[in-house]
Amino acid sequence: MTDFAIAAIPREENGRRASRRLRRTGMVPAVLYGDNKAAMGLSIEARLLRKLLADERAYTHVITLEFPKGKETALIRDLQMHPYKEEVLHMDFMRVHAGETVRLHVPIHFLHENTCVGIKAGGVLHRALTDVEVEAPVDRLPEAIEVDIANLEKGESLHLSQISLPTGVILIPLQHEDDKEIVSIHSPRTGAEAEETPEAAE
Image (cartoon, rainbow, N blue to C red):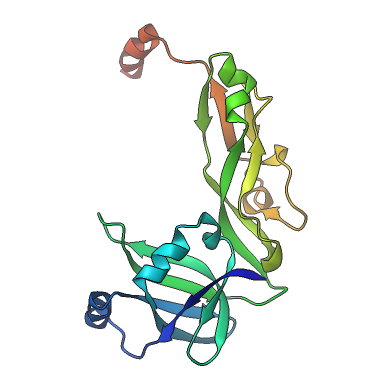
C-alpha cells in the first residue's frame, strides 16, 4: 500500500515557541490525526522531508511514518510553507489503512502537448485546472489524472466528464454536477484585440 517511508519522532511539546525551537534543530513539527485515534504531535528531520517531497508522488501516496516504537500509515493532508523560503514550517498527516476510501486532490498531467493538433495549428493552450479532488480506495489513488490532448483542436475544450479514469476513482466535482473545464485551445490574441480590450471593459 506504500512506497514511501520516513522516520518520525513523537513530541510532547506544542505551541509556537516549541515549534521554533524544534526548527532551529533542523526538525519540522507535524501532527498525525484520524482513524478515530487521538491526534499525535511528531517531528521529522527537515533534510529527509525535503528529499521525500521532491518526489511529486509523495503527495498522493500512502507514507509509512516510522517511529522508534512502531509504524503508522498516513497521507499528507496539508503543509505550511515559509512565506519566501523553500522551507516546510508544519505538516498534517492523516492516518489511513488498507481498504479505506479517502478524498484527495491529485495533479492533472497533460499528455502529448508537443503533438496537439490545436497547438500545431497556432492555438494557445489554456490549463483551466491543475488538480482535481478525487475519491478512491487508498490502494487505488492515482498519482495524477492524465489527460490526452493530442486531438484537441483550436476552439475546443475538454471537461471532467470527458476523461477516462482508473477503476474505482471518482471525480468529486461531478458528484455535485460541476462539470468543470479542464483545458482548452484558444486562438492567439492579435495586437488589435489586445488594444481593444480596455475600451470594451469601459
